[in-house]
Length: 288
Length: 343
Image (cartoon, rainbow over all chains, first blue to last red; front, side, top):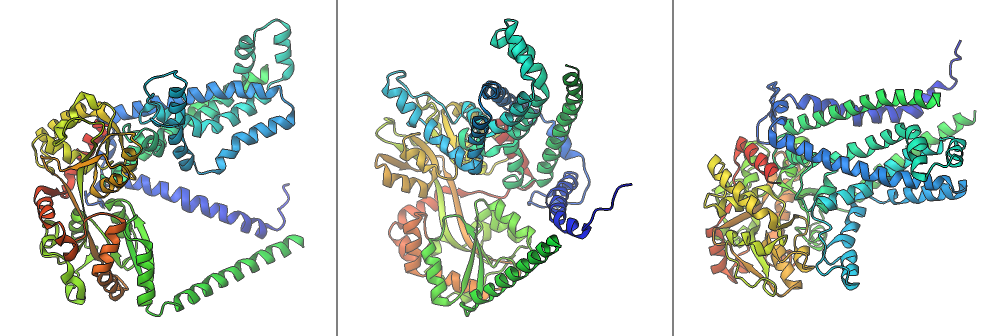
């Protein structure tokens, strides 16, 4: 028999704010958005209670589908770059003492304490036409015309990779740190190159961590409209911008809501895939 | 036992702090004998010291909120309880829309002794043709601006921007109605047209312009021209004037095809609780000296008679050749789609 927890009033009072928060600020708005997505816009920024599926049908307009694809393309590149940086970093950390590992991970986290909008503005100083990078390269004579580092897709990718990198590093690091060191040592003893050690030992054993990180990078990368606005110069619209526009300029809240629900469904789909793959991977990991 | 004490002390702290917060509010309001005024205005539009001068002179506490687009104002007004806001500053087409949605109260001009300071040039505009709900506060218009020391040609029309030489060199405000409007004007159509063939030619114009666009920015497009990140801009006049102060090579021109006007207005929100204070505030802002202080800091066009007098001929031309953005109703969907397609 389970013992009845003591001081249940105390527990209730302590968890009540969190429960209230989740219900009031997460669940209710999502339900409202879901409801809204079936209404008809009156084009005066309001809506009428005529139920319709038109908002969902509109999403499949070629213009918007193209944008979903473009947006996903950018998010995929960002995810791949984040993986490319996180793995070597995590494996590099394995050779360090626990103390320096903690320190280095903390250094990854510290920029998080600053608002990401401000950090994004910081990139302007580095990347713009007469910014630090271009002036340095120009003065060393490596280039003669300033490079276009921002106000294009390249700028967006840099900004997003930078902002989302910690979300990749943490799960990859935690997966890599769980890999049995003896396995790595054995592989090295048998003459495996660094690349081979990564490919045959680390990668298969850390796939679920990588997938976890990929989700945490990919999903926000579709929606981070402010990075597209600031570092992309507003020239490239991603899904986040499209949704924002429905609420702030096109006055079409129901369509904005439908786009949000669609994005939410895509997210759930990805999570489902993750659970499926993650489950199998765990079994594989257990067997090894 | 320990936990109970902890819980008890927590509750006591909450109780004390809430009492403190509420009593503090009473103390604060007591300092302003004549109550308060809830204003919702554009960001950077009225200098802070003008507001504090009003608070001191009239003993009214001004609660000042801001928004950065007309649609944001609409969202705030329509989603809050009537009486939350007293005074708002919608632009032309939004005045019309807010009146239609029943979110404004008529404005009683008789209560404003300084209403006669407004130049008739700015009254009875199409969006509120008898000024029943609104009085003009400030006017902005879109202009072409370019760096004379870098661009050798004389830019005069939107079509001039298509020149291949200006690759990646143009900064535009990030406002779909204004920029689509410019593309429509460039293709010889009306700025507010939603006719399919007009929109098609606007898209063609955009596709030609695309390689030349450096960025879209509404927050501070002047920075691009000051730091020489871009040498050509299609921006609001005040931004262009401010940029000119920093970079004297900048030349401002009125595009020959026409340009956009945007008039922001004093309007009373429906159910305003402090309408008397709102009238006092409007009357204060209409004073000659205050009007001058506002445009000194934010160089838009004030409708103040004395200020208008200085360059009346030019302003008459501006009002005649520019056009207001009109509310296009459900057709806005087409514009939004065009914008998505273009970007």
